Length: 338
Image 1 (tube, rainbow, N blue to C red):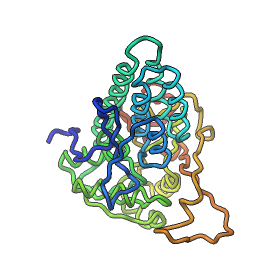
Image 2: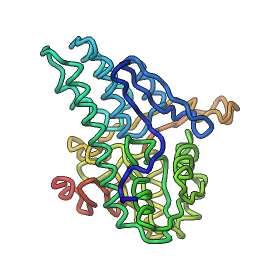
Image 3: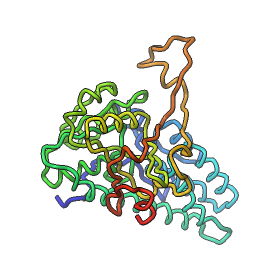
Image 4: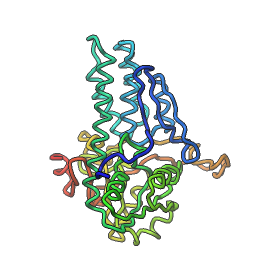
C-alpha cells in the first residue's frame, strides 16, 4: 500500500448535498457503539461540538464549516452570519474552529449562489485537512524507528480529523512503511479519549496497543522511544495547548530524555497569540469529573477543577510536525517561515 494513502475504514463526517444534512460519528458512544448522528441545523452542529459528539481540533473546524453550509441553504445572509457567531462560541481553545469559520465567512455576501459558495469552501477545508494529515504522516514517519514504543495522549487520530489523523497519522504511515510499532495510550481523564477512542481506532487498524492510566505514564516513560501528541492551538513562540495532561507528559519525557513531538496542521497555529499564557483554556462542566459509570465518585462538598486543556512550553517540545515539514527550535522563526 502506498505510504500516506487513507487506510481508515470509517468516516467521521459526511455531507449529503441532496438532503442538506451532515452525518457525524458520535464519539461519545465509542468504543461500545458505532452510532452516526444526523445534523440538520447549525444549532445541531453547535450542540454536537459543545457536547463532544464531534471532537478533535481539525474535525471541529470542518464540522463548523459544514454547519454554515446547512445555514446557507436558503441564501439568507443574516441567518448565515448569525450561525457563524453561534458556531464560533462552541469551544474556545481549538483555533481551527476560528480558522475554518473565517474562511467560510469570506463567502457570505448578497450575491446569488451563497449555498454553492459555502459548500465549495467547506469541501476545500476538508481536502486541506486530508492533505495535511497525509503530509504530517509522511514527515513524522521519519522520526519513527522500527520496533518503536510510542506514548500518546488523548486522541489525535482519524477520529479527530477527516483524514488519517495527525499524531496517529504518523503511526499509520510508519506502519505502512513496514515498521513494527507498539503504542501506549494514556487513558486521558475525565472523558477517557485515550482509553475509549485511541485504543478503538488503533486496534481497529491492527496496531499493537496498550492502554495505561494517566498516572502510569512516568513508570513507562523510560521504555519509550518517542512521545507523540496533537495540538488545539500553537502560539507564535511554539507554546502548545493540548488536552490536559499533555504538560505532565512533556515534563516526564524531559526528565527521561525522551523526544517529545507535537503533530498539527498549520491551521492550528495562532500568530495573534504571542505565548501560551494568552491561549484561552476551556473550563468544562464539573459533572464530567464527579461521576464514573453513573456512580458519584467525588464528595458532594468538594469543589471541582476541570480545565479541558493545558499549555506545554516550547522549551519542552523537541519538534512540531506540520504538513510543511518538522519545525525545530527556535520556534518563533520556524513558525514564521513555515
